[in-house]
Amino acid sequence: MTDLDTIVSLCKRRGFIFQSSEVYGGFGGFWDYGPLGVELKRNVKEAWWRAMVQERADIVGIDGSIIMHPQTWVASGHVAGFIEPLVDCKRCKQRFRADHVGGEVCPECGGELTEPRWFNTMFKTFVGPVEEDAAVAYMRPETAQSIFVNFKNVQVTTRRKLPFGIAQIGKAFRNEITPGKFTFRSREFEQMEVEYFVKPGTDEEWHRHWFQERMNWYIRYGIKPANLRLRPHDPDELAHYAKACADVEFNFPFGWSELEGIANRTDFDLKQHAQYSGEDLRYYDEEQKEHVLPFVIEPSAGADRSTLAFLLNAYEEEPDKEGSRVVLRFHKQIAPYKVAVLPLSRKENLVTVAKDVWARLRPHFMTTYDDAQSIGRRYRRQDEIGTPYCVTVDFQTVEQDQAVTIRDRDTMEQIRVPIAELVDVFKEKLA
Ligand code: GAP
Image 1 (cartoon, rainbow, N blue to C red):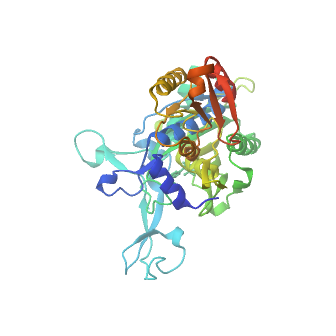
Image 2 (cartoon, protein in one colour; image 1 turned 90 degrees about the horizontal axis):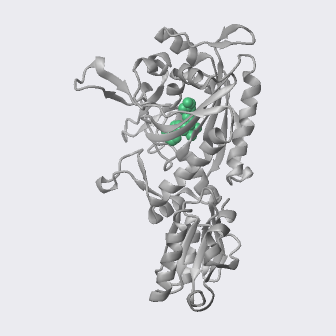
Image 3 (cartoon, rainbow, N blue to C red; image 1 turned 60 degrees about the horizontal axis):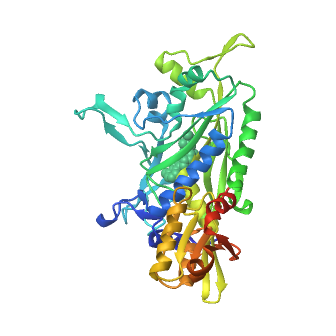
């Protein structure tokens, strides 16, 4: 595993991730995805959606609003309970989360810390033109709540029977006291959450099912099993809504840390929303002829943390003729670009054919084009951003055989393929 600084600098240099508002000196806890990063993160989200929604018969998706009725957050317990203990250093004035620093003295300068003050990490805003208490609303700190308040809408419109799940990918916001470790802890981030509704009594079995499902998903998309583990929470770590929880953890350069939480939320949320809204959110079980409030198993993953884990996991540096080559060995479906088209030189006849090849591939695959510097350098540039295949157009292509060379990122093997067959060959290779 490489160190975090290497990945941060690769991300900036190649256009994966930039500091937000960099021209103004950046803005703590906010990040922008550049041309490569946006593709990478989209692929992570699509791989999740494919596995959770498309391939399963028992999960449907929604896309809820970020700002919800403020009562949502009273009912969910976030207004009262989404709080963190804040301490200040009396000497250097730095601010920390008390549970992160643990000890009595400042980790930066050794100074004395203040008593903890409790601080709600939901971002507040005002809806409508008047900035008064009655108009206060919150930026959602988790996507889950719009799933809970839509439980009945979705169940009725899709005529689902238990067990079934509702999935959502979307932004969440937390005014973290100490954002950091690159995108790992940000103030604006994206979650990929499933709320899986089950009959009470079957919840523990489903909880175990989801542990396995989610571990398998990361491995399917190339996370090395040695970099992953499942860690059950101690009772004193549990969120206010959870009966049990286990985290999927990744072996980050700063230690094993949470990628995803898989919680048994019981019937807590539906019960709270039923009580605060006055709506009956129970499910009618036609077999048992009774109304039940479903229990919920929640696999809740972070799109940004997963993206960072995919980057770290893929990074390899290996010796070669020119010193060393850096390769991001992304799974093909995760890689930002699938193919790079490279004319051997900038001779006009080569460039014309190469641009034609690029145009043929673009409708089918995310494809890039590069004609600057030596072919060896260009292969290295594509290796460094994880492009699985390079296509080289050379003199033989234009003068003799209308065929091109495909070079494989991982094996570095080269094969010759007629241009006319290129799309089909890549459809097979990238399937
Ligand atoms: N609905 C449950 C929930 O929100 P969580 O453990 O607080 O649970 C779930 O968050 C996931 O969201 C985390 O595992 C992490 O991947 C991501 N996440 C949470 N806070 C984050 C932050 N400040 N920055 C980046 N990702 C975050």
